[in-house]
Image 1 (tube, rainbow, N blue to C red):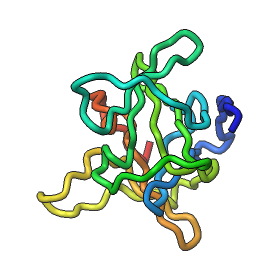
Image 2: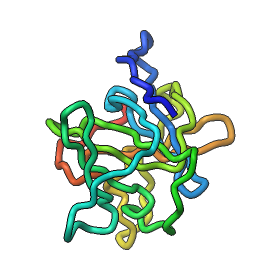
Image 3: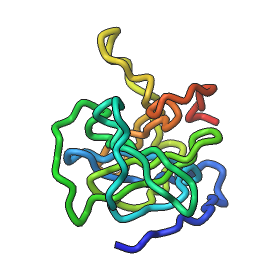
Image 4: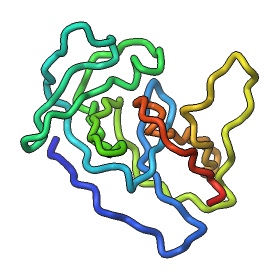
Length: 162
């Protein structure tokens, strides 16, 4: 698979936001398109000793050493062999660049303000802090991730109503 650079896509309509959607274990997730630098076909990474199992290692991206996380393992999902659909989504997190291994990329989703919901309250036993919210798209629900919190980079919370 060829690397796909992601354009700086901005919606002309302030009530609309765009998310790159991808699958993990048959479920759809999304990250803000403006956080995505590029999408790469899966390639081998250099392992790092004593790293958590979800940290697959590092890769060289045009001279920059980029850490690579397997989101399935980060989310406690079952391990899956990488195949021809597996990709690395390269995202900007603060001053860092991070690669996220996902099962496959779906598309860029335009989400109207009215189709965005805040993260549901699932009780104290379920941590929803990595969720930015839920997007409704026809009969589908897409879990929107707060990519900063997913990779452990604290930042001010972004409200969906903004």
